[in-house]
Image 1 (spheres, chains in turn red, green, cyan):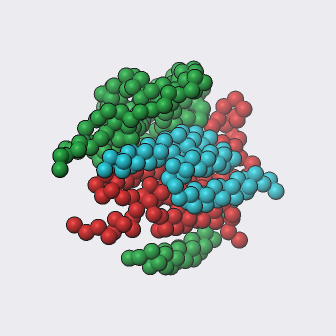
Image 2: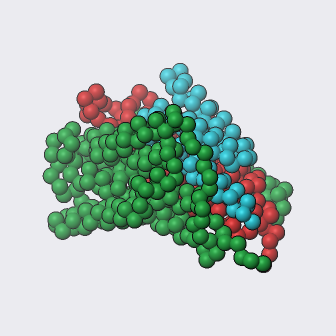
Image 3: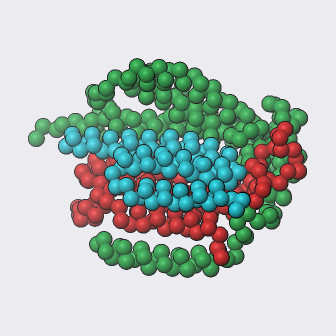
Length: 115
Length: 247
Length: 82
């Protein structure tokens, strides 16, 4: 049986893509892309998790030698979050420019415009 | 392509993806399993370099070249957004949109929390190698903390505290400092982005070599970049207007 | 079950994501996105990832909803001016 966490990650990805496909507003599309990207965060962190382990930050209460979760996937997820925010920013900037040039943010109406 | 065709295509693709994902997921380790080979390799390496926060050691030391790529992505996307949102020929920064005055409670809240947020941001950046945090998180906290001035005051007050050229310089300085520290590793006789500074003792503020220095550089860059990004959107929402051509 | 809290939060994250996608109006969607970001960071804390949770709160709950609201406002402003 596949662990529930991996199924939730796949569900988030497909849900985000479904939102993009059925969207009627470019800003709504950009937010759905960000939801799809959050599915990858859940997958990465779920792979790195270990029962009974603590966060990979050592200090007075966690001396070296305590079992910790995988820190490599956490560094990958950190990069992922930052890149996802920049992608969303660029998509929103594009939406503003489309609204200014074509007067609409509905993707279906945009397809109908021919030069 | 109309909406129904799009939906049917999506359902087909989603079905294929679901099947492939289920097949692949049987090969993934169990949720909560105890076998993590990357962790067993990276934790001792981080502790050897006197960095208790293993994630920061990975981001700024062991996988530092990936963070250089991420810094470049942030820099490039801020540049891209500024280019996309630059004023066109028929646009000008006209009269600002009217804004309601904030409630006195909101103003008090904002002005009291503004120094707290800035200090918290600097704390998160500087202690990145000791406690959870680092350049990225602290940089974003700094940038959004500055915008408490917009929430509590007015757009004009924000603009006075935020001459954009400072933040352009800060962003460029942060990116350049990251590359310079990397090149200094070459000059010191090791490889690019080597951790060549003295390591100090674990837990002290000045420890872990270049990790703290790179964390500050990235914090500067991300704070400057996010302020510039938000400034572009604020300008579009509040002050840009199209000149009416007489028809 | 030792990870009951993790499973409950996973279910909440799935429900939150569904609400984000189903909210059509972008200005309302920004607020729901902020709440979804908080749920995600709670999940990350439960999966023992405080660095990632900090990053998610700062970016996904503060910066992205702010940019979405400013975009909606910019679009409405330009629509008024045409």
